[in-house]
Image (cartoon, rainbow, N blue to C red; front, top):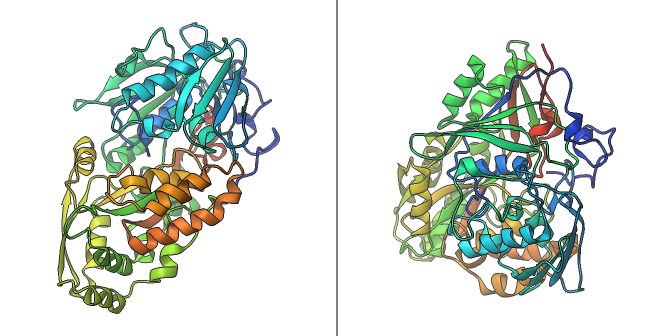
Length: 533
């Protein structure tokens, strides 16, 4: 699971993202004249499962946001979730402990089955029951009970206040599934997935090592929502390496690529485009995807706060962004990225730029013997090994650290490794579930977080985070998030490295990419068309 300026509430139909907002048409208004050839998109965000109860990564959510509906969703350029399958939703009490939704009438899944409040209840209860260790159940953990008084009403009662519940329900964690199709206690195969979103899955081609390699989608003729499809078929292809994706883009096997290309490649394409030397074009936009250097604080060495503070003093984000990622990222000094309420510069305020002398003083004061020996493990990076090797060089400045770099190429093994505390130091990206500061704090910090760094601060987990979740006015919680980030910067269980910029590359005849690249994290397949050139 895996994202910059505050978004407008909702742009009108005359705006740049007109085709995706309310009142701008439905699937029945499919674009005319783009032919029957599928639009093919490539990504290196590999995944294994497309079942909402167990899927919790960028590769699955990219597809699920286009094939499932949730009660709410984020329209393009929106800073707040708005009703999707729901007609309306609201907190029923002043303390954010009861949330009620009324469904729209006439909703159906792609198989023709009616979508009712009972399906919503089943979907939520199933995710919580399966409780997959790498799944999204944690996002719904505040739900104490959910019930359907009738076919159109859903009532969520929460164990504690959770003002972020609407945002959580607006993503694939809140995907509504057909209770007549899905087993209550296990995942459904990828090629059997049924949703009520703009697209339905026609076929899934699996990779030899598991997980989808290619998913073919077509318009869901039972869909009655607001999206207007600008293509008649959409294919998503998963690639193991950025170089494989670039080769497919060059050969015409794919029409566009998400933010998966190797940074220097994306930057060169943009330069060539500006010089008129390529048929490819790059859409550069905002992103609130972030990346961190994570410590296993249960480890004897990485568990020493002085070691972590010294490392934070040695990381050079500017060099990383400039020399490794060709300025396709921007330095990040905050758990919360720029453009999201609660963003600060806590790590810069505490550590400033790279300073070997200050790092040495931290270790000397704590009587830590140097060089500090750590193993840095990585699995996937758009910059491949260059990212880890550059971090190694930065940490070894002044001879204070001795870093051994190792790659775990298998993503599932990597996830299992951090879950089991096998790594001392490792790099990981965070793809926002929803654009709210809580999503960069609670899942990453509280009780060791999703990446199992093992650190927890009672003031954060027991007071500050619960206090922020009482604030239905999310801007009002900014002061608490600043306080949280100061505590995190002091203890450095993980170090924010950078915030991605979005570089989506496409062939020149592909249209609509500009309309769907924004900081909501939702890439809307239905916006993409072909000009016929």
